[in-house]
Image (tube, rainbow, N blue to C red; front, side, top):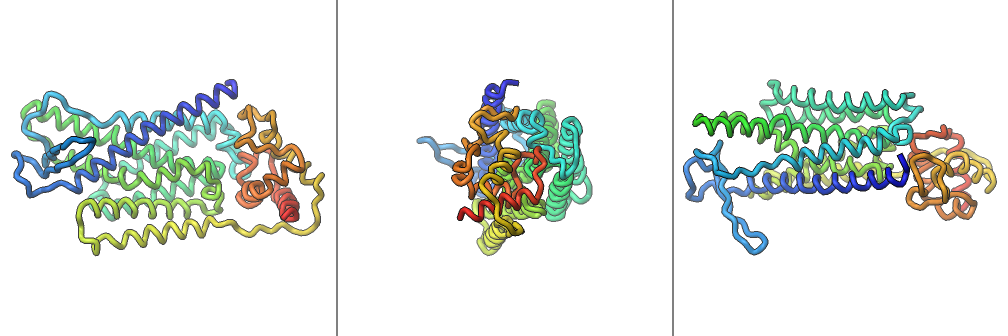
Length: 393
């Protein structure tokens, strides 16, 4: 595919993914907030659990939520499903465009595991599918009857996936797959559980039967999971732009801290909207803050051993020409780029001095570059470049 057209395809798919993702997240946040702010004491229709008065855009809205379902269905019933479906579809398409098509650069790191492109893609697809099947099995098992035990099991499942991905993919590829892993669970909660159960309940109503309350309860359980996973998955999906997240030797630990921080923020907001006594949920704020500070601490730049010995400008430039210029040139020769990434050009000694701090972070400390270490840059070479950069300060 032409690089220019490929970049446009990447942009359009990413744009679509952001649009539908925002819509899905907004819907999730709105309905969770609505559930928590329902007035269960207001005089209401038969079978109504609670009501809410709301104002927005110059108008007033009166919303009722039924305990199970209304006695009679309205003529027009609005379904909230396509935002979730399209978020998954565009996200998977973006995975194809960015990570599968350019697997050698973004997904495979020979120093982690020597994979062919199709082997990496197969592991990716199988991992996402297995994640959903295991998650769904846990939810349906006796463990799913206790929300706290179930939450702990899901937490462990995601960490196990994060650990496993780091053993087969590049650091960048592993971290994005944790986000895809969680996103797949969230999307299939809607596709395989929430919407089908709602359709069964609608059919029961149309036949004049009493709807199965357990179907609604299961849908609510999965919707709650989606709500608590939303903030962590957002961080994981933008992680490719922040290599310090994925480059940590135990990046699964960073995943754990992000999960705790995001879930606790959502818990705090949810309980505050429910009007609970602050003494019952206030603990979530310091836990979230501690997890965030811990994540910042463990991802802080690490001291690296650079060895000794002076490095000449010529030697530094030779290293960069060997490992970096294929992408970071005015006219890149790498098949994935028609222009230098982030407009960083490294063709002269002056260029190297200009971007020295960025090179030190990305090449020496994080080892995020070269992409997928396609050129096989060694630790000794990184240390040599690091010594040259240090000498420029």
